[in-house]
Image (tube, rainbow, N blue to C red; front, side, top):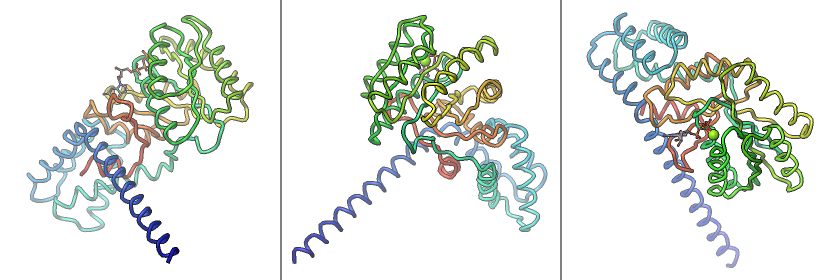
Length: 329
Ligand SMILES: Nc1nc2c(ncn2[C@@H]2O[C@H](COP(=O)(O)OP(=O)(O)OP(=O)(O)O)[C@@H](O)[C@H]2O)c(=O)[nH]1
Ligand SMILES: [Mg+2]
């Protein structure tokens, strides 16, 4: 009898757990959909309207689709690739109804993204890990660090943040505020200090306090490639020398509202250091969400995180299928 009672109880618990995770999955997807609202309007609503206006599939229809994708910042090369493949599928599968195009387009976008064979998970499965956050002014580095720390701490990880952007006092204070909100430890020096020295202290704090993840902010000003390279290389050398046992994640933060400009920035940063992933911010504020597709297929960089708002819980892990489904939903 006791056993039955136990079984029933654990079944109930399991059911509750399943419902809870179903709910959080729903919330996650709803939030993603809301966050991608502008891109959805700019892309899917337009595609729906176009498809409605055609009674057969012809070159003009493909031209219209091409224009919509380019406008959503999918990128010229990727767009042409998608359209070519779409044409092939239409031919091969003898599709004549314009209504069928949307599903084919969705599946070709998923295919293209899957073919780049990128791992969209952060390298944070083991411990310790150093996450170096780079990117141009205003891209959303500090905000992303705050949100990421919050997420990691909620997953049970011990996080330390190092304020490697010493260029302005306000930058250090802003990061400290995020650190307080995320309830993580914080290492900083004063304004104008050597960023590499801050990272050095961060590493030693992470070691002695047995932190799982050390997240480092950087100034990453792009006024000249040489300066950027010097600053980042100095930081990388310190990490290599002082913390060889740590996994590394070099996260490039890009502002989605800048569209193709974000792609050019990524090219420069790729030349200067080994980027292992991209955090794409401000997707909620733009119709240029197609840039995700270009980042993965043209630059070969995995998008690992996306920012869909300004609050602490507005950073999501990126998943290709969820992303495509949310845009086309
Ligand atoms: N809507 C929206 N705003 C965001 C998002 N991420 C960042 N922001 C805003 O973008 C602005 C710049 O963000 P920061 O985190 O200060 O950017 P930064 O790269 O650290 O900038 P610097 O320290 O000046 O180099 C802030 O006003 C943020 O609130 C996002 O996902 N959505
Ligand atoms: Mg900052």
